[in-house]
Length: 413
View 1 (cartoon, rainbow, N blue to C red):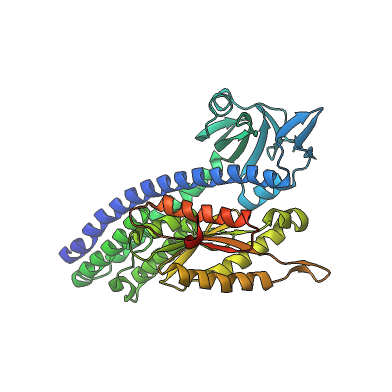
View 2: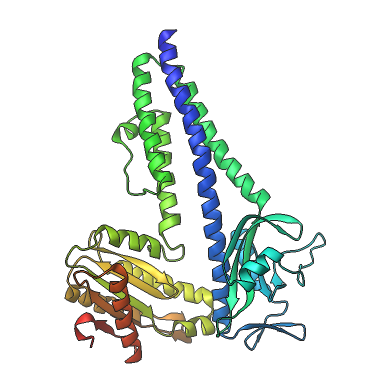
């Protein structure tokens, strides 16, 4: 009986701690992810409409306009976003809903309704983005993110909204919390059937997993699971492998661009921070020439194919350990390289040739693309932002001089 107590009691205490810790971590993590994902959707909604027409939103004579484009009753973009993400999206012109995926009980679009006074004050009047984990949207509790829509003069003329019903968000959180509780209960039950020696080993194993999950909750994706955990031939090893898979999945979600699979901006800055002030260090800012024309003529699906192909080519520019590539935004890409400027410049020329040789589209209506790069070498004492800004300035110089070129640091005046 004493051995059983020694086996169960420590794990019982640990299970309680893990349960409480897991619930708190999951709730905080899910709340952050909900806010981040809704923010991205609200911003993307504006970006998508800006690619359709560069003009401003307006409502005239019962028509919803984007520049010279009539959007009245055209819900393809909004409905596609809802189908892909499960989130409702809305375009307010002024404080009135004009385009929305929100429907009433009869299935009618809830256009013509107004934003809440709090949203009007914060977004329209103060020009600030606004997130609420619980806000009333036409009588239904939502987690919602609001982004101001501005005209060319910077005046707020509308609002982009993305939100999910609180019931859906809470169900997801409860599912995650329930999973953590089940894992903890399983560990405690398993401890009741082993001897004292194995119990001590189990305690050490669970401690390793707990530390792994704790660091994972803190955003550490570079850690390795303890070999002691992975060498086991029981359920705890499975749990360790599951934690590793979860870590990798979360890393992809947090650090990678979902379309291209490249690093996102946040992950790139974190990686370059790790090697900062090591010499030599070179960055290259690249941009697809006339990419908007591709989307306008051939559609966004073709545009996505172009972005994926460019990402594949750029990803092969630097080998593992030499550097890393990120999608900086839209059709812009940023490369960090542990090497001399001339070496990266030579590789970029080969990559540029490969990119320009690829034909996209149908045989009777095909096209090719080109890229412009600005390449900057780290100068002692400058910040990351300054280095990236210099690369961007060189890229801009290349755009002004005719595009489809590589502008290295050495010729910048």
